[in-house]
Length: 325
Image (cartoon, rainbow, N blue to C red; front, side):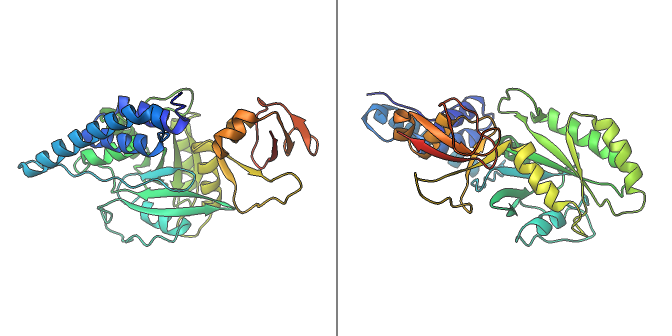
């Protein structure tokens, strides 16, 4: 019997192989166990994963008894993907999270108000993206667990204050600190565990002199990273920011299905990676559909209404698909 390991398991396995800390390894193993197909062909693999998890838990428990206990936080992923908010003190991360979600982070004028990670769900149309507000990044205060959470996230939203005369210096400091702690920005091509997609929120765009600083900020970031101007205070640009997190940062699309002759439920899209084919979409719904798929009909981008397409046809955001087996 074939193990028939799915893409979620293989992705978790790759994260385990590239993990740096014991906590990151344990988190990847937990995801491997949750996504591995449960049948006889994988029984030995499941047992091996459980043994590795048990060993790591014992090591972590033993380490906690020692004098130099290290903090570690992990927040289960929800929605279309998990994006961490990272930035210098007083960049407005907490207010931004409050502006796009129902989360209620503490917001104050003084720095280091946020001390622990806080999640919130940001909605755009019929999808949600999970945002995690993090403590500010500064040379004197950054903790190892913060870098570990960045490495486990699906993407990073770097938040900077366009009302701050030192914003360019803050950008360079944070990029350097990230690289020193095995977190590197890479928006194109294949990535390993330490390389993350990232974009910038140019916050407080309503502040005096912000537009001039934004021009300079775009010059130093060039085309390496997408910059979205916004104001967490007034709400300007926040909808665009969440939209770009879904399509640009996370690289996702929404696809809708319906049974032949049935109706489409536009409130419940399947969230897939950009570039997903018809047969790959079918596998996300049910492996048997993919295995027996003959063809599909698609309503959407680049096709006429209900066009018959082959298994390797690439889907686009908003496409409606009917699978024929």
